[in-house]
Image 1 (cartoon, rainbow, N blue to C red):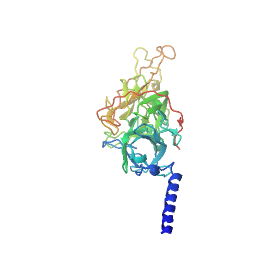
Image 2 (image 1 turned 90 degrees about the vertical axis):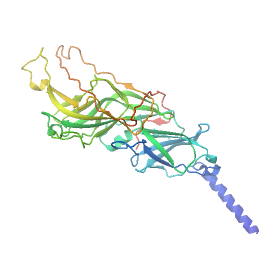
Image 3 (image 1 turned 120 degrees about the vertical axis):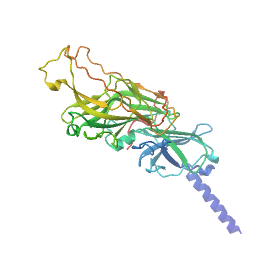
Amino acid sequence: MRIKILTLCSVAIIFVSSCNENSDTTDKCTGGIVPLQFTATVGEMQMSRVGMQDDKIAIGQRVWMWIDNADDGTKHIGAWQHASDGGYKLNPIPYITKYFPAGNRPVDIYGVHGNFFVTPDTNKPDTIAHSVYTNQISSSNYLVSDLLWVAELNHRAQDSIKLKFRHMLSKIEICFQPVGSVTDAMIAGATAEVVNVPKNVKLALADGGGLSYGSLSNIEFPLHTIPASATSFSGATYAEIVVPPHQVKTSQNLIRLTCTNGDTYYYRPDSTFIMEPGKVYRFNMQVKQTIKIDPGSLNPWTPESKNIEYDIVPLTVMPEVDEWGFRDVNIKWDYMIVPPEVDDWEGKDGGSFAWMRVNPIPEVDTWGDKDGFSFSWDTPDVASGVTQNPLP
């Protein structure tokens, strides 16, 4: 009998010692018994078309999670990195199981995917600084540029927590078609860019509010075309570009196509519009040449090339707009107002004028909400411990 008692005591001692050794990564020892495990979708509705990372987080993409105690907002688990399995599961890095607080008390969960670094196990910052890549030709640069955010408050213990991330930036989809005197061969290999857009944002983790800021940049993207012989854009594939929300003005070029022979085509809208967070803007663009005529100063000896205007023209006056996965969601955003381009009123050489024809605005799709968003983004400072370095 004494031997049996001593054996039971030894087991109890070993059990307590094991809990103490793992107290930093396992709250099971203080009463929590339900593990924190996450599945993730992007958006909550079926989209009419699905592009990269439109409905789920791509395989290998990293997500940072912060878990706070719901009752008082204190840290339960600091910055905790996960990776998507390409389906709907998020796996912790390193693979260590962590648990709900003692007594399975509810938690507040915050998650962000994007182009930034944080220090592991640190408290939730007020904001993070995210930047989009200026070269989004590769899918990897596009995916990391796609800022995703989720907040699940007062979440009670359950075996699997289903998170619905939302797209916080704007998405542009573009396909080109040569028309008229412009041939397929003329635009083959051209460099395609979205121009005069901000690349930096600050995101408030608590409520998803945001701010676009910084100098303007150009973003290169892969050229997608349909042949000159095509009668419609039906079935076309589109380049996908992520940009921070901002105001686009009529005086500002938005799209540039530079051909290998040096010819450059531009598109600018004919009315000011806002690129809103969580929305997709689809452009069906035709590339053509037109002749500029100024009856007051037409010089017949001017080489014809000097009078050629290179235009990119949308097929519809208003762009197609789709939600990027969510309906009836308000995102607070402070838009960056893009300053207009300024030209000399009398011409760079003291009186030579060239009048650029203004084109209509693109199709717009919404990247999250069929009924639209209202936005206003706060501008808190970036918390310490956060850098803008890209993910490895």
